[in-house]
Amino acid sequence: MRSDTDIERDVKAELHFRPDIDERDIAAKVNNAVVSLTGFTRTYLDIRPAVKAGEISQRIEEALRRSAQVDAGHIIVDTRGSAVTLRGRVRSWPEREEAEQTAWSAPGVTRVDNEITVGFG
Image (cartoon, rainbow, N blue to C red; front, side, top):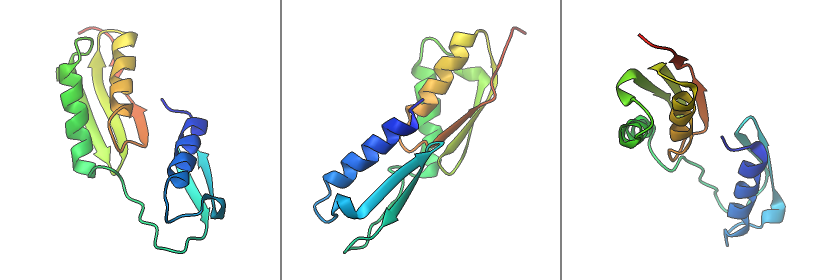
């Protein structure tokens, strides 16, 4: 999972490399992976996710199927916007953690709620 500090650093770096924005005019704060921008720009600033919400679950499901460490057949991926909820059952805690990391690595994901249970049967 990415920390708020890491996200804030990346946002500020992106603002730095935008030629149409003076990064000194925009303040970026991150709290629980939610980015807040304050300030002003001389041009319209278009902020949107890199991928469509419907594509997020598809990409996560495909990545879970490719993972040798996760039994993807027992995991349900539910997305609402850029927030992801994982449900189902896996055999071990490392498998549960791997599923969560896989979800976080999908482009556009801003939140992951891991409701996967661990156990047999």
